[in-house]
Image (cartoon, rainbow, N blue to C red; front, side):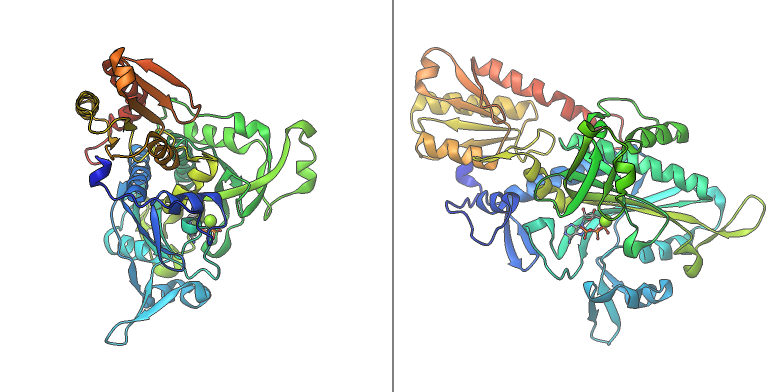
Length: 456
Ligand code: ATP
Ligand code: MG
């Protein structure tokens, strides 16, 4: 993408309304624009990041064997009366009437709708296990929308629902989700710690929230630093193997990690003092096992292998896709702007032309631009007639992890400069070698789709 043909409305001034760094940087980098309180338009740069995150979520869900679909944003109120949640949900639910006076609502979550789909089509244990998910906009009329996309009213969420024959099978689904979530966050360059949580309005026995440590997080968290040493890396995982999933879940949930809602001071005190941490965190996901809470009242039954009709065991699992954009920035920025992890960066590399209009420099940039595209790399080429300082400031603000700088002085010696946004370190290389290096850096990220169904 050539910057002169793009739409990147960066702001010079720091917007006064933004209280936390991710919100300020998203506004300054031209990623979002507020439409109404807690409701945002995603401008092109922000949209690219949102889609990168969404894609990772899709890939990791499908790797775990979960099936994508799409449910509507608007739902009939009657379904929620069946589960008993229509009155229980309170003012966070946006209630709407259509022209015929029928009561509708903008979905804050989808347990009722998915249970209705399930009961219409599934009757036998032979069709289980089944996990369906979608990524769709939600609306919760939050009393205090704030922090930009982190606490919006309209927000983008992955929500998935498992249907299993009994508790054991549903616990496998729970653990499978935990492992797939750990992988998902790791690919985004994040450490999200599963913490024992309270069940809240979704209800249920078993639930973990995933928290990204950040000073600006809304939750108070308590943990043993042993949990922060854990990493999945490129471990091969067989998601059908219940024992393997349970073992990984156990590895991550054995060290103490809880939010203030479930914190137990006495248990916490048993951890060696040097490993005890009290901090703040951003909730980027949550998983629940809730048994027959919805299947019973809504009649989602299957015939088991004894010929009896039994309610299915369910769980639901959410990832805050739009909140993650802010959470990643909270976890990865400096005083000059955003620092995107390679897995979610809007463009893989920035190309800066130091002397726009100089034939040799322009040609070198065009060649590099084409060579990067030929490698499947997305480049933002700053081809504006601007001072070098202004071009660098823009690149630093929008946070592309790698930058290639091309100027007449370097070209005289046959070199360009490759700069790492995170460390600030630069290296002089031939244009060909610079392209090669960037391609190598992204190879592991591009390899993630291998072995997945087309479209994942
Ligand atoms: P919170 O406690 O932050 O209000 P929640 O526990 O009510 O969130 P869940 O029902 O668990 O939310 O939804 C799944 C995920 O959706 C959350 O982990 C979070 O990442 C995201 N999410 C929830 N509410 C919002 C919101 N208002 N704006 C942006 N993302 C949200
Ligand atoms: Mg939650």
